[in-house]
Image (cartoon, rainbow, N blue to C red; front, side):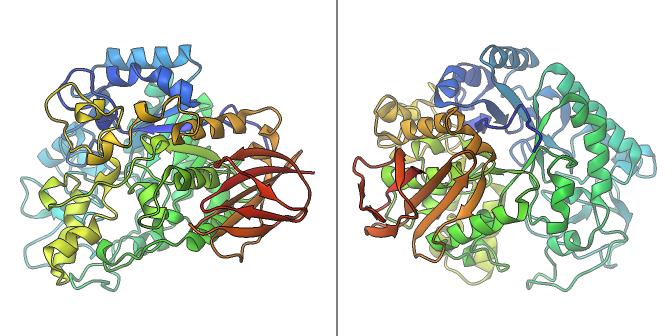
Length: 558
């Protein structure tokens, strides 16, 4: 494998609105991020991904961009962005921004001009179709946020436009080379400015199945999941290769794709030496327990399903390229609440979860607050929810006949707002996130118990354990095995045990007892050294290892 500058790095996602508020308005901002760079450096972070900070009316928290070339005033100024880039460079850190290129905002100048003249050049930047009242819509695809993906074009009773996401997020027509050129110019402008790369949002959606056609309805609304269309659309590799050739490859940029349900035959096109992206997120565990009926019908994730899914997913990219590994992000609930059985969350179990995902092949991403074990928000009323997707899924649950209290409980298990609550810096008012009166989104009431100040400098804390994990991957003694070594599952059939080898110039055994009860594990050979242990004790016989509840170990074998 050709070695790249980003191999062996640790990445960190910042959701700017909820990270650190410097001016007391209740919204996190760029100066707040600049003030925390030394903290992130201490944690072991090298690459920082910022969720969108572009100008936006915030219908979908910044993923509806009205101006790709400017910073939304709530986050600061372009001068603040320049300062962030400069301060990061001083610390040998790299800044990555979101690239949202499947859609823009309906307040973007392109869409405004398309509304003025749907038959003009900007009308071809979008999917705009003729339609008259009483006629069927061009297709029955469901928006990811619920309802039809078609809405009336503002100012035109005889036209509709496509939006696979929020109705204020019209899809861009990648079939139009003029539109693609505009996007490439913008991307190169940012890379020339000093950006290290991009996290590429919803990119698999840019290729539509044309001409439009219906699929069998999968819910009572008569609509179907857009996934049916994506499964049949052909030719996305042409768009992605051109994108990489015209932008990323020219700058040796780091790129990580948000690619849901990729086809196995697409992996060489997405990753590796000829791939369009440096990496792509592994969402395999994020989809566990999902239901076509809606979030309310999702099943809980068991430790064994988590293990099996991780191993199967890693097998798909073996010898091809690197995943970017996550247990949570801004679109998912907190990993500690999702993957650790209810009532068993503790610093010990959170360390186990951290170690098991962090040391898989690929690039580990930490989402803000994950390093201190932030948990899901205990919502008690739908009025506390900001996320448009959660509100839509709540209505789906009500339509299915659930009582409001039960609908709220079930839907909020997957709410995106769980991960968007303000970072819990300390036990002071508003968790130290803002000196203002009220944060934009409620603070999790457990902030007096779970916060950075309570953990920083405490040797046995979760925060310090994350520091140890990042340091271990960079340790010259183990870097070759942990960054470039192969993964071989060990004892995959043993219940609630997740164990795997990382084999390079050394053989390491990563293992964790994913339950509260102790259990024994057969040792495959003699232990040369205990590299990492989330509990103070270590008990082993010649060919057997005793693991306490939620004990996690990294062993070097002879």
